[in-house]
Picture 1: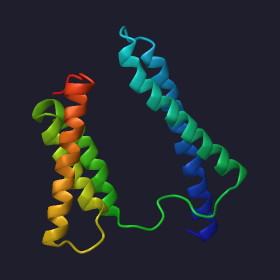
Picture 2: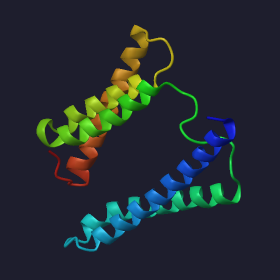
Picture 3: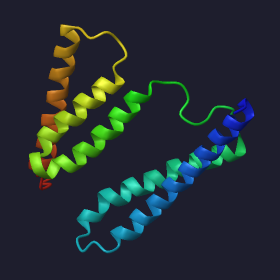
Picture 4: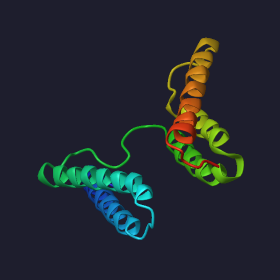
Length: 151
């Protein structure tokens, strides 16, 4: 496969994914019209609108100024697979093991996927403590301040 072929595939892939995200955002907006409680519509509608705006911006930018870079670019494939797998596992595990425990799975896997530097005891301690503080803070925010029912 030549260089121009991979560049055009990257261009096509970027346009396709941007278009796909616009449609997903529109479907989500349509789906929220069937929600009976107005309060439960706010978050998905906000996320859908942001998704449509950012994907639309990406699509227009890519159409107006095509880039030579596209596709996945450089990187280590197992990090991407780990991160995406961790997000799916977290979604499926949350109703079973709860918000905090599934948050640990997501945070730990995401951290392993994102960490390119050498691990040390100090790094593990700092990231572990900061992750615990963040997860507990979100739990308190959702459960006791926003009154979101959590598993």
